Length: 239
Image (cartoon, rainbow, N blue to C red):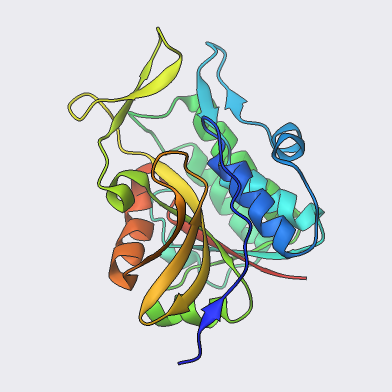
């Protein structure tokens, strides 16, 4: 098939900045000039009452894309927050389902405060008219959407990079590798091309990132394994 290769600027991230860094990469592709500091100010990394970083809600960043004038769609294979039987529901019906689901979801990893942030992001997105689909994500799905532009993709950080799990240190106020006590985490990359049966990633991670081409099955496995953080989603765009 014809090569797809978008010229996406690589924006190097700081701690917990992958959500915003990839947003800057996507926005620049669409001619919207935003610095990383601007996006971080407008879509902050949430912090708990105890001062620990909670990360950024994917629903909130998707809402932000709508506010920047992009027609935005979330494609999810998550089955913790969402349910595949919700396919075809209106936005209002999805909002009601999410509000009902919030009462029953528990997590050994996330506080109630963090879960509230996650659900609020998706509800805000739906209220602004964003669309949520429940597809099967495979190689053809990715190629078909890449024909319309780059994809904002959430992946398993540990699987994608064959990296250790991480644990938050109260001493350094940073995440440190710990394969025993640590937890798997997710990461955001821009899927920016396809050629020779490989997908192009533009990855802002300071250690493992850069521009690289990877096997479709490896990428797709990384997307599905983002379910460890309820984050197995892709975001696509149209102006």
